[in-house]
Image (cartoon, rainbow, N blue to C red; front, side):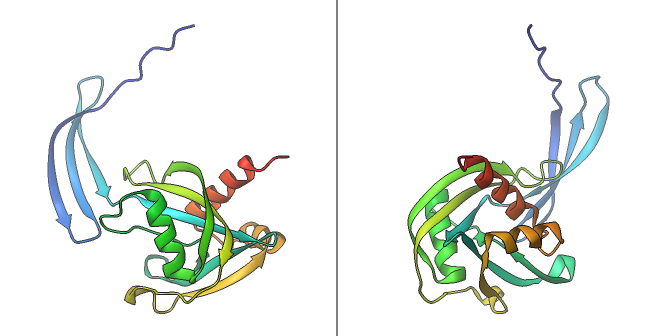
Length: 182
């Protein structure tokens, strides 16, 4: 059975509404497959890497105050590095920067969309193992960041209880579970 091609939306023009060093907001005038016109707002952000640092059947997490949600939040280390040559290099940089850890092994788990309804931003998820401790070298904006290690059962309970709500961290953990032999 042949699947028909999916209808596409055509961009008629695009206007940058706002930009700063971290984001660009644009408004696109579009044409739907039936010929009607509309607008679509798109938030452009750089892709990033997320790292799951695992050792002793547990995981290293970072916690910091997240201004948009108005509270502190636990997640796996993640971020973007301007002009980084690759997602793998970004993963190594973010892990060391946020936790001080270095990884002798970094396994790519997958590439996911962050919020495909309003941004084209994607992230690469990596499993970091064979960890060596060190001193974090956090950015100024990460000055309130904390780092902790949690056993697997605690991490999973934190997800169930809504302590970990970062969707990228939860999605990356799901990738890890799918990569783990049963």
